[in-house]
Every structure is written in C-alpha cells, then in structure tokens.
Amino acid sequence: MAEPARREQVDAGPARTREIAPEAKGKVMLAVSGLEAWYGESHILHGVDFEVRRGEVVTLLGRNGAGKTTTLKSIMGIVGQRQGSVAFEGTQTIALPSNRIARLGLAFCPEERGIFASLNVEENLILPPVVGAGGMSIETIFTLFPNLKERLSSQGTKLSGGEQQMLAIGRILRTGARLLLLDEPTEGLAPVIIQQIGATIRRLKAEGFTILLVEQNFRFAASLADRHYVMERGRVVDRYESAELARNMDKLHEYLGV
Image 1 (cartoon, rainbow, N blue to C red):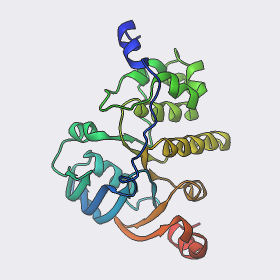
Image 2: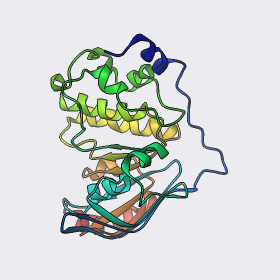
Image 3: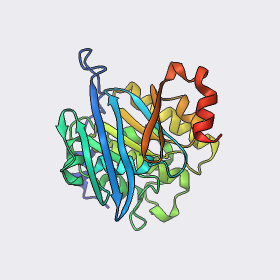
C-alpha cells in the first residue's frame, strides 16, 4: 500500500478541467509524417502520415495487421526501430527514448492493458509518475469508474476484463498527460462496459483531453471521433471527417471488411 503522505499528495485538491484557450483550439498537437517502423527485419510501417489537433478525438481504423497498434507504439518510441517525423506540440520526438516522450505529456493505454497482477487497484493507480499538472485525482477517477473504488484492495488478477480496462485508463489519467493513446479499449468487453468506456471518452474530450484511438469496433469509433484515418498495409490510405461518414459507408465497409 502507498505511504499515507504520498496518498495525501496524490488526492489533494479537486480535478481541474483542461480548458483549451480559444486561440489553441484546432492547433496541431501531434504531426506524424513519413513514419516507418520495424520489428527486427519485419518492415511494418511504410510512411504513415496524419495529424491530431488539440481537443480532438481521432481514430485509426483498419483491419487486423494494418499497422494501427504499431503506429501508437512508434509514437511512444517502443518499437524496435523507427524513422520519419513525429512532432508533439512542435517538439520532434523521433530520436527520444520512450521515458522522455512520456514526460512531454503523452500516455499510452495498450490493448493488453498492462495491469500488474501482484499489485492491487490502488497500487496500480498510483504507480505511474505524474508528468504534468492537471492530472485527475484518484477520487475523480472513481467518479468515472465506481467499480474501481469497490475493488480498491483487489489484486490485478482478481479483476474482470472490464475492470482491468477501467484501471488501465484510470491509471494514465493520473499522470497529467495531454494526449492519450488508447489501443482497442473495447476489445472483448460486454456491451454495458463498452457504453461506460464511450461515456468516459466523451467526458474526457469535454474536459479538454486529446485522444488518438485505435478501435476495431467501427460503430463505437464513429460515435466518438472528429476524424478517422484508414490504414492498410502500414500506410494511411484515406481519411474522413465525422460528417463525411454517412456518404462513404460503402467504401469504409470495403476497407474494413464489415
């Protein structure tokens, strides 16, 4: 368990809404250009290009193996080799190690969730370091995910898949990160939990977070995002604003195989 003094520091004060100044809205927060990535000798990304503006929810869509998860990992610097350009708020990160990238204000929630089985819910929540001001207090996280408060002393191995996903998202909300990278947050979850995750993403957007979302559930993604990029074979092959989805459904179905 955490020392009392540390817990007091974590929970002190109400959560602050990340209000985006009018002049900052719409500015590019993340710009990816010509991004290539390898796992060993396997060349996975072949010149990925897209951007995310401050305050947006943007999705990467595509079939399995299109390179979506590798794109997120490449942004965070956790692939074997990468090259190209990744600029976060004007800072070039392609040559930085993952710990320095995280401290700029990016946070990654992986598909496998990364819950520490030997730690309980509280210990998992307080483990990541705070990288900036404006992170949520644990009590505010409990308002998003009441299940976590009820399971505070439960070990990671005792949580359901939905509770693990809540914990994985809650954990990065403490850090003060300004850009959240969410990889398949609804994978394998019951419909009622998917609805809760969707409501959480909407609230986070309303509070000023910027989110890059990889999602196989197209209906879920379509209900949340401002813009969608479609990936095939390690490249972005198309993009759609939210308002353009209805008239492009046939093409999207072809891309996604649905």
